[in-house]
Image (tube, rainbow, N blue to C red; front, side):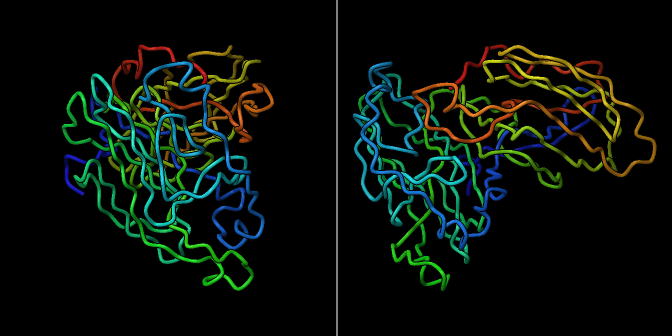
Length: 346
């Protein structure tokens, strides 16, 4: 994939430049059984074909930022998609190997595509994304969640956007003797949205190479940038061979209507434990001396909530902690906030 079509996560740390240990994006739905393709297909809950999301078109005349992956949206034509399914509380749809969306023209036009998919094919899958006949991504995705922020070609002010998601296919019954699912499946779409702006400074949407992590859901795209919800207990293991950071900057959003208790622990030492109201939660903390520790183990714990229990209009059954927009380590005295714009619940 060329430089023009990739939004790469960067982990750089030296004075002033934060080592970004991005927190908000891979679907850890594997903990709900998704990692086991056979179990998922045996216990899959199929939701009847969803009616077009008329509420979305009533709220805004623009389709920018609307996630079209889980169910149809009025005004956007589509082909090559199966009905909505719910895995681990998270709605998604399978393609048949060639999913096509046609978005009406926007003024100004969209500039980016935010996408998260789940590949369950045991052999992995070739993935090709094409916008108005122009390839914007070609890659091979292993059996895992894949999230990217991609640059769209110059669409013009009056052009519809045709987006094609092409992939290899497989039949679950052909790879798992216990499955009765004989459909030809491509990839599972978790999140797909056109975006007008891109926040390429905040690396909060997907893993950083060399940093182990757990406790995150898949990437969602808010305010032009990938973000991830925790499941209430997120953890990083960050190598400290080349860095000895002194500051931790945390930029999160508390979506729980009741607020949440949030705690931050580094290498077993509790740095923060306090109640937070719904809204932005931004902190800069002084780290303990790491001495000869090979790893910085960072844990972020919070209360959890289920959106569908708090909002009658929500179909999200996931257990969510906090939405992480940025986690950065630095030897500087302070790290600027990742976002000056408040994030509202979505």
